[in-house]
Length: 173
Figure 1 (cartoon, rainbow, N blue to C red):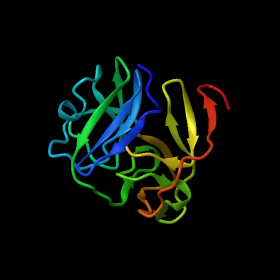
Figure 2: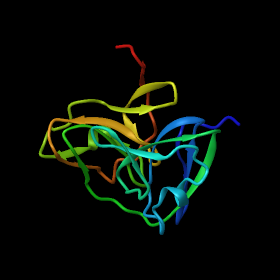
Figure 3: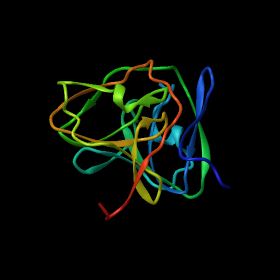
């Protein structure tokens, strides 16, 4: 089954469909679900769910705003029900995997506290290579590096259409 790029496909009043690729995905939970466990949200996964905190750690209880690595054996849609949420995302010095909430977020609209702690582009992973993104899509997880502990704030009014991307293959510059 051929699906569009991973990320949120459609937002309904109470739920959202997330498109997942075969293999490893970096995902996020765009809504506050009544049950935030990995077994409930992603029952068809073929791996444990991992968060990144300087090393990969297995987690069962997922949080909005965080990104996670998880593997699936085939492309699929996953329905996530829940309430809309939006709040600053806590980040730690170094690399972080984060995910937006129920709306696309334009990178240029993201602010931080303390100011100017973002030291990298935002990267998604399409199963083969990392991609520099201009827009964060709900349901996807993104790598970002920060220079110190802090918070990332998303501008809730930054919904736009997706524009061009730069692509980097793993192991290349």
